[in-house]
Amino acid sequence: MGLLSSIKLNTMDDLFQHELRDLYDAEHQLLDALPKMADAAHSPELRSAFQQHLEQTRGHVGRLEQCFAALGAEPKRESCPAMKGLVKEGSEAVDASGSDEVRDAALIAASNRVEHYEIAGYGTLRSLAQEIGREDLASILQHTLDEEKGADQTLTELAESRINPRAARH
Image (tube, rainbow, N blue to C red; front, top):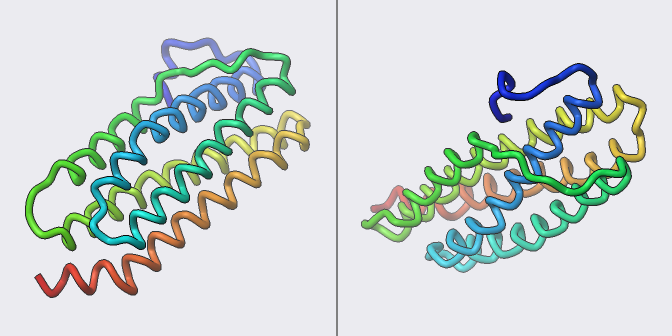
C-alpha cells in the first residue's frame, strides 16, 4: 500500500479505491517482471509456471479494470512501493550468477514473496468490497485471490518436489 499520509481517506469507499489503484499498479509491475523471470528460469517447469502466471496476471488486470468500470471510475495506477521492492528482489535473482538450479530456487523464493503480498492485497480488497456492500466486486476479487493462492501453491510444490532438491545437490 502507498503512503497513507499523502492521501485523503474519509470513507471506506476512499480506502477501497486507493487499494484498487495500488493493486492495479502492482499487477502492471508484474506484467513487466514476469517475462524476465521466465527468461531467466533454467527449469522448463519453472519457465512454464511463470508464463502461465503472466497470462493469469493479464486477466487480473482485466478484472481490476472491471472493478473500476463498476465504480464508474477510470482505471488509474497509484504507485505501489511494496511491489517495487519485491520486483527488485526478483531482479536480483534474475541477474545473479552461479548455479542455474540455485538461481531457480532464488526465483521461486522471490516469486513466493510476491504471491504472498498479492494474496494479502486481494484478501483485503475483497473484504473491503464486502464491507461497502459491493458483493459483485467481492466476487470478482475472490476469483483473483483464488488464482493467486493457486500460483503460490504451484510454486511451492515445484520448489519442494524438484527445484530445491536439485539446488541442494550443488
